[in-house]
Length: 335
Image (cartoon, rainbow, N blue to C red; front, side, top):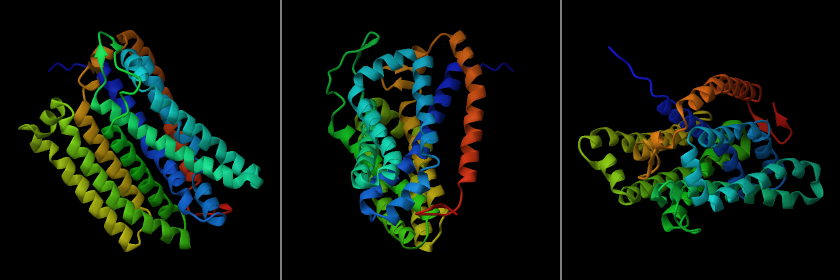
């Protein structure tokens, strides 16, 4: 029996893994920033900040890996997507810069801590919203002629992209709330649990709304999700989402601490799987496939050799950091 090894597909999954790792790892600390205005200044905000301070900058390693991998392995996709989405991507980077600076300066400059808290919350909101708008703009389609972007400056700004942006904000806030449930105690934990219950409902509603609209954007989406026999498989995804949402609700109501965050991660994994069903094997939906966008095979082999060394190292130090800073946290740090 002969087996074929498709290096381009391997790289597509490597980059998809990096993007998913960024979404779930940076998603909860962006969620902390989104919840920040709802927390009382002082011990509550300090505790929330301390819960992510040791790991937040390492989480963004995956963003660099995903963006760098797209540039190196799928250069045509990079050349098309970036001009189409310059504005939301630049907004995302500026948001990440503001919140990154606020992490350090709010401790070193207590006289202006209120201003740095605004920068932290505002940067988190801008970054999360921009990420969702970027995804929505990619899903709705990018105008391509030949091998270049042929649309306008504002093509990314549509009701659908705003809907996806708002949905990502809500989902990240849910992830942040469940993280606080797992990492904190007492009144802050109880408050985070209440937020998580409401955000669970809002997230499921957002998933349902985006899922209902997406098949009407392009015929290929409807075919992949609704045509026979595909629907026999794809119908399991919304069923699993409903089961995960119910399990999350039950875990929050029962007083569980770790389970809500883990189930929320599973909910993100299911939505990411749904995204893969919608667009794979395209990298620019309906326009460019992964094979059309791929770099030469020799380049892919060279880059994969480096990635096979770097990714295990990143996973190892990330796992070690989370292990060292496990447990509960208060306004003074982990204990």
